[in-house]
Amino acid sequence: MSAVEVTDIGALMSEIGQKARLGARALAIATPKQKRTALLTAAGALNAHRKKILQANALDMEAARTKGISGAFLDRLELNDKRIDGIIEAVRTIADLPDPVGTVISEWDRPNGLHIERVRTPLGVIGVIFESRPNVTADAGALCIKSGNAVILRGGSDSFHSSTAIVDCLLDGLHLAGLPVECVQLVPTTDREAVGEMLKGLGGTIDVIVPRGGKSLVARVQSEARVPVFAHLEGLVHVYIDRSADLEKAVSVTLNAKMRRTGICGAAETLLVHQDVVATHLKPIVDALIAKGCEIRGDRQVQALIAEAKPATEQDWRTEYEDAIISVKVVENLQAAIAHIEHYSSHHTEAIIAEDAAAVEKFFNEIDSAILVHNASTQFADGGEFGFGGEIGIATGKMHARGPVGVEQLTSFKYRVRGNGQLRP
Image (tube, rainbow, N blue to C red):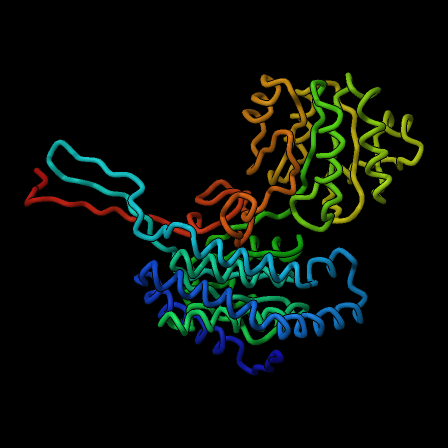
C-alpha cells in the first residue's frame, strides 16, 4: 500500500476519528478472551507475513538511504528477523497480561452503608504520532487493544510501508476476534496536515495524544495539542559513578548504557564521576567507551587525564546526542552530581553505580526523574523490560502516567457506588 493523496485532509481525519470513537465503544466492553484472541492471532499473522513485512521495510530503508538519512535513524527504522521476533514476542506478552479493564483498584464502605469501588476503565481513543520506528505500530496497537482503547496511528513517511504491513496483521486479529477493525487505524496519508488535525482532537474524538519521535516532533505536539499528551521531550540520561562504585560494574554498566544502542531514548548521554574515584575509575570506563568508538567530550579534569577527550561546552551538558558521543564530568561529591542532574536533566532516566546503600537512597529520594536505576543499565528504561510487554511511549510529565506507558497507564478509572435506598440528609 502506498500513501494516498487526499484533497480534504480535514474530512478524512474527521471520518477516522468518528470510526475510532465507535470502535472504542465496542472495544471497551469486549471480553478479555476476545482481546487476547485478537492479539494472539495478530502475533501469528506477524510471523506468517514476515516476508511481506521485511519487503515493505526494505522499501522504506531504500528510500531513507536515498535521502541520506543518519545512521541512528536507519537503525531505528530497520527491521530484520530478530527484531520481528521481538515484535511478535511483545504482542504475545501483552496478550497474556492481566486484563486491566474492570479491575477494582480499591474499595471501601462508608458509615451510611454505601459501598464504593474505584474501577479501571479505558481512556477511549489514543492518537499516536511517530516517526521511524515500525515496532511502535505493533506496540501501540497491541497495548491499546489490551487496554480497551481504539488507536489512530500516524506514522512518518519513512516507515509508512513497514507500518502498513504490521497494521494489516493487527486487523487480521481484530477481525477473527469479532472486533471492529476501526479499533486500529493507520492514517493513509503522510501529509503533515493530518498531524495538525489530530492535535486539534478530531472534533473531540481523540482523548490522548502520544508522540514518539525527535525533539522537534514532540515539541510541536506539546505546543499545539488541544488534548492531553503523554510524552518526553528528550532523553537526556545521566550515569553517576559514586565513590563506592564497584569498578567492574561501573565499566560494564556505563558501556552498555551508552553503546548498546546509541539512538534510543534510554541511552546515556552524560557520565558523572565522583572526584574520589577519578584515579581508579575514570580511565578504565572512558577507555572502554573509546574502544567501542565513542567520542568523549570532557571538562578540564577529564581532558587532562584523557588525551582523546574533546572540550565539553555548556551545550554538551544539554544535548541528547543519540550517537556515539558522551559528555563526561568530574563532580566533587554525590550532592554535586544530584545538583548537575536536576539542573540539566530532561527527567527521563538516571542511574547511580554504587555499593553504599545510603548514597543510593539519597540519589533515589532527591532526583525527580521518571525512572531511577541502581547498578544497572539505563537502557532498561523500556516497557518491555519492565514487564509491560511493550510501551506506547515514555512519559516524563507528572499527571496520570509517568515512565513507560503500558496497559495500566492507558486506563483511567470510574467509581461504582452501591447502596440500598440511602438518602443524603
